[in-house]
Amino acid sequence: MPGLTKYRIVCRVFQGVGAAGTVSLALVAAYEMVPKDKYPLQAALIGSAIALGSLVGPLIGGGVSEHSTWRWVFLINVPVGVVSAALLYISVPSNFPYHGRPVLPHPITNSLSRLDISGASLLLGATVLLVTVLLEAGIEFAWKSGTAIALIILSGILFVAFMLNEKVMSKEKRTQEPVFPFRFLSNRPWMGTLLMSFLSGVPYNIIVIDIPQRFQAIDSISPFTSGLRLIPFNFSISLSSILVNIIAKRRIPPIILLFIGSIIQLLGMSLFSTLPENGTLPNTIYGWEVLTGFGMGWVMGICLLLPPAVVEGRDLAISGGSLLQFRVLGGALGLAISTTIMNNYLTSHLTPLLGAEQLSLLLQSTREIENLSEELRIETEKAFAHGYNMQMKVNIAFSVVQVLAVGVIWTRNGKGWRGQIEVVEKQTPRE
Image (cartoon, rainbow, N blue to C red):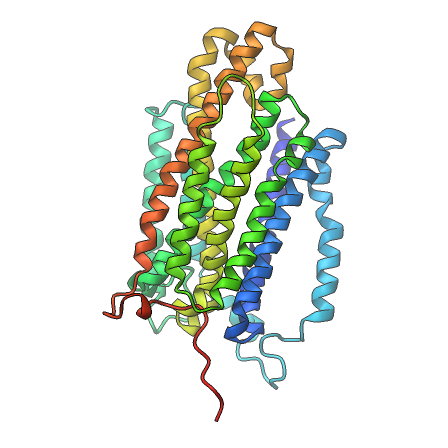
């Protein structure tokens, strides 16, 4: 079925392009719709929507894999897309955010000519090549092979070309709007925000894949049921993103809130890595889900609030896209790294027991564990449990860096805590 596989990949690409645009535009529209004192509420709503989507996604995916075909992975988006389009048509004013003006400042034809096609293409190519080598090295080809080395070198070249392209695009006389304006590099608080978004995306993607797989491999439960057991994690993210935005309205510097959230996340990751490796899963795992999710939602909620406070008005639209792009990139790289570590460990420890062919089937679906003999099943479950804990140690490493990265947002103005950036400015009384 190679032709069908390629067809699904192409469809997934189109689906991803549309989804990426809607998420970024929703964030930018939220900034345009309300005054600054309403940003915390908007950020809380957006964070809750993201968490809700992450909660429902695994459940739908688990149900589809159990009771239907892969086509419904795509078809499920048709009614959702129709309803979303209808709601947008009804609720959003025509020509938003330029509604009420006689002439649009940038007609559609001019807007298309301002796109940074070269920058977007270079960034996409560099990212895809890097993720490919991280995912496939050690499985499809060796790390020392010419393929792996070539992919790494090409990815590096494309990243350098991307930065050079953005430097040219950032010149004042250029009509195109750069994907990553070069002036971002001199804005330390904003670079710190992007770094926080990148680092917080790493453990999130690992957990939403790790936890359901852990339940399937060790507890031998269905994909749908394993998705249900991820509810405490996503619910905690939603709750904390709302709570932190309520607290932010009291004009507490975001650097303090980011530090608190990062510490909570690090604690949760550390506890996850202590789960037993004897083929059992204690109920305390749900407590670790709540704790870790609380820290992640806390950090995500503040990151969504920061762009209007740390970037220029002309960069507000691109900053929203950059924030989400960095989070997605961090998640992709983190998942690739953790998957590589997991697969390499399983390959080295289970190949002598199962053989290459049986292990290949096992890596494609953990349900193959049920077909093993009792002795092999126990050893395989122990290997998987150790591998999952190794993935959590990857999360610990990134979470430690995240705690340290909070310092990048510190503003050196001689005013200490009172001089730090605030996401809600002090309101001056009307005359």
